[in-house]
Figure 1: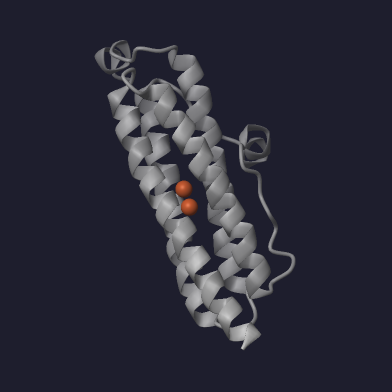
Figure 2: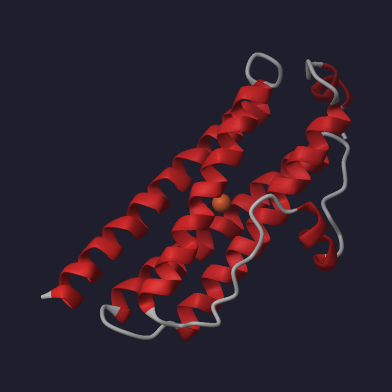
Amino acid sequence: MGTKGIEIVGMDVNVLLELLNKAFSDEWLAYYQYWLGSKVVRGPMKESVIAELIQHAADELRHADMLTIRIIQLGGTPVTEPMKWYDFTNCGYDAPDDPFVRTILEQNIKGEQCAIGVYKKLLETTLNKDPVTYTMVLQILQDEVAHEEDLQALLEDFEVIVTK
Ligand SMILES: [Fe+2]
Ligand SMILES: [Fe+2]
C-alpha cells in the first residue's frame, strides 16, 4: 500500500475499490467465457474464430492482472473467492452451451458492449480525480473497443458465407 499514492486520489477510495473489484470480476468471467468458447465452438470459419477467442481470452486475463495491481496499490483486496465474481459482476457470464459460431460471437459481442459501457463510466468517474486509474481504464477501454470490432467483423464475414 503506497500512502502518498492513495492520498492523491481525489475521490472515496473505498468506492473506487468496489468499482475496480466489479470490473475485476467481469474480467475473470469474460476470460473464462472466451477460453471455454475457444474450446467448444463449432461451425463455419471455426479456425478464425478460435484464434480470435484465444487472443481475447489472453487480453481479458491481462486486464484482470492490471486491475489486481491497481486494487493492491490502493490498499484493497482483489475478490478472493471465484464464487463472489457473480456478486460483483456488471456484465455477468454467458455459458457457451450452444457452441455454434454465430451464438458464440453474439454472446461475446454482448459482453464487449457491456464492458465498453462499464469502462466508459469508470473513465468519467476517475476523470480529474485519479489519473493512474484513469490511464489504466483508458488502455482497457481501447482493447474492449477493438474486441467488439473484431467480433462484429467476424460475424459479418460469417453471415456472408452462410447466406451465399
Ligand atoms: Fe477486458
Ligand atoms: Fe474484451
